[in-house]
Length: 315
Image 1 (spheres, rainbow, N blue to C red):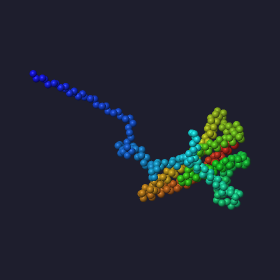
Image 2: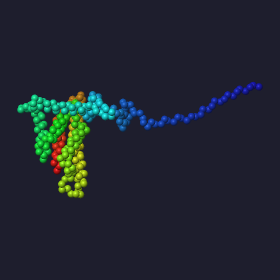
Image 3: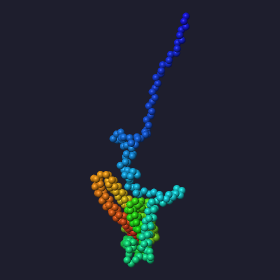
Image 4: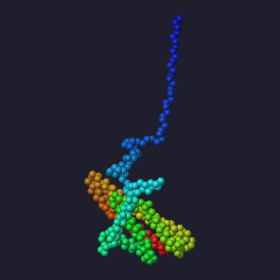
């Protein structure tokens, strides 16, 4: 009897496997490549494509009109958590002080001024007479000797602001008075000094300026609060006015001059001819800004004289 052939084990039937689940969606997908084409009209593209029209011709960075007001350290100095760096603002303030002292030195050398004044002496005499007349006109009541006590402070303030503003008109220079902290420090320190003068002359009676004579009693609390707020805002108004006018004027000149410079290098005859209009506007604005620089020094000085007159004469 033949032996039966061994029955081999049957191969296992493959079991159907469950497909792997789809990977979860990344809530923060990677941004597209910088030079990738825009897929839809709503796609804004990369950041470089957006700011490309605002890059200057040299390719050094965004041509912002506010770059001219940047303060950067020339000599970094740090003591603990305090920074005492010598900045570009400090440099131009020292240059302003040096110009004022140099001009006075040219006038006062060899025993004083000449009978026939030269150009430097004429400028110093003009500034001196202008500020002296301003003090005599705006500060009333006290004698001439009392007014002369405040004259040096007012003369230094006007001269410093005038030279700072005019120095800022020089190309590639820095306008010190275009920063609010500098103008605020100047106006706030003068406000404190004027308040001290008022208390020295009148004592506690100085508070009477808060309540004018003849005011009905029910309105007294409101008027006192209103006059106090108005008096305290004098420390801010002078600094804000000077800072805003200088920064706005320089920014406008920078914007229009950059626009004219761009049109000049467009390699197109029509742009070159059309550039004459913006160039004339820039020249006109430069002359206007020169007048504003002188006017703002005058306005700041006359406001100081008015505040000083109020502190001395009260009502």
